[in-house]
Image 1 (cartoon, rainbow, N blue to C red):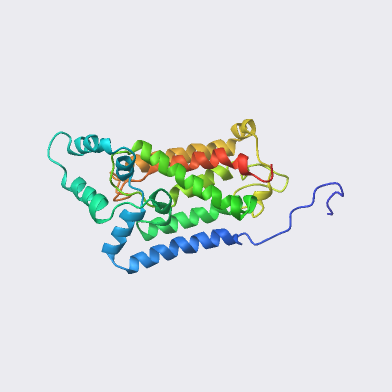
Image 2 (image 1 turned 90 degrees about the vertical axis):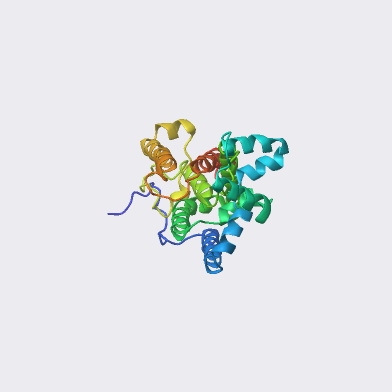
Amino acid sequence: MQPHPLSPPPPPREPLFHLPRIIIVICVVLLGIHLVLSLTGSQFEVEMIFRFGFVPGSWTLWLNPAAEEAIFERLTGGGALDPRALSLMRMVLVEAPNSVFGPLSYALLHGSWSHVLLNVFWLAAFGTPVARRLGEGRFLLLCLLTALGGTLAHWLTNMHDFTPMVGASAVVSGMMGAAAWFVFTRTPHGGGLIDAHAHLRPRETLPEMLRNQRTMVFFGIWFALNFLFGVGAGPLGISEGGVAWQAHIGGFLVGLVLLPRIDPRG
């Protein structure tokens, strides 16, 4: 059956897994950095994580040197200093002081292969439609701002912590927040994240988004999983270190807020 002459033609087919160049470059950089660090030995890798990860306590001291006494009091709890906390402070303040690039460079580092592979997978899934929609320049700007959003959220909730935060999860979360404006929009040709033409869909208004059941289910699942992993990662044995769920939320909100302001499709 031929389509009606007045009906809009379906978009041309293109490979589903044809990733934008900028996504490929970022994924290769993330994997390459982790490969190099994993091959150089654990001591060097740890030093790089402390230097170029984001250490909230270090920045608290830089911004307010008078906070040293409050940080020490919190770490000791009025008693003897915990050996782990002492080791962290020595590493951060003496052996590998945190770099000024930490609020951004942390997103290039990862704690394990599972960590970096998971972020690369979700970046390819959610970053692809966002990159196609925004173009490389705006996409890179959004990556930087979502990384900073994750930094700010993590710092505000962990000011006295000297554990370094690493990982591109805040950026990935930002892509999820940005993509939510349009990937769930229903069109005559279908809809969904795996549609190769998701980036061409109209961006919903805020009221339309709030009425979109699929978007609201996605939001609910996303926030629930972040809370679950944030609170239960350690006790459940999911992760030896904590999960910086506050950074995820910070990145997500930045992506959600900024996409309408930098969307070239209006």
